Image 1 (cartoon, rainbow, N blue to C red):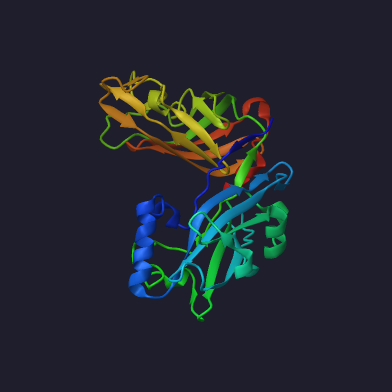
Image 2: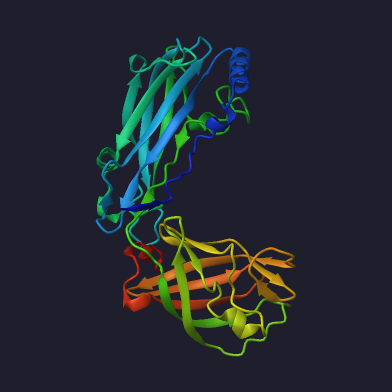
Length: 343
């Protein structure tokens, strides 16, 4: 069975937060009544199911993006003429092949495409498959990676000739800070995870630097050893036997490996994201936060992936850092999606 991560995406239209209850809806009515003109587009629901598979170089079957919109104006939706939906592709990879596009008109919704919703205001559901978005933007599907995104912009036209879009924030349609950046959506493309990163991986660590003022005295300039990543109940999330790849034990007498009950590493598309804290008590690693006197978090930055070798610059919140070349167990290649980080 395929495993999915990063299904949760950022929604650029922050209006949804502000309309979570009846009280907020009344505020909208009050603002429109005070300004005497204008209109807004509310987000009723959204579903981002855009998932890219780096093994097949294509979107997973069924990949789509769906939003439910509600129009509101001073006459309860009677002024609605049309809503134009524009789209462009934003290439967030660092592999030199920038596919970012300028926006194009994707669809124009007429007033007749809307029907009364729960509040008797015009609502419409729009849904676009990955194939439709690829065709509209003209991108090469095989060059997409997780973390790229499509960007949508709405233009509302009223029957009185007024138009509103994202650039109108601060005016009557935005209501100042209350409406907070309407008319934009930024669904991020998720990754389809089809293999496990678990294993006993060999490391070579250089550029070893202990935390300033931490009392560290590193014995070796080059470290070698292995680190074990183990699967958890969450797909794409692993425990680690040593977040520091031997740096703690090399630079601090008796400290122990940088691990613990709260330590995890998440495979987040092109990145490896450390989560949780390493706890210290009197300078020694302890498994949990019981009476700890220090909490240390980690950051990993992948700089190159070639076959079975992954180069990571690592650092922690105390200032310890180094560079590790991590060779995957058995000499197997790391997933090609990580090569997006190659400098």
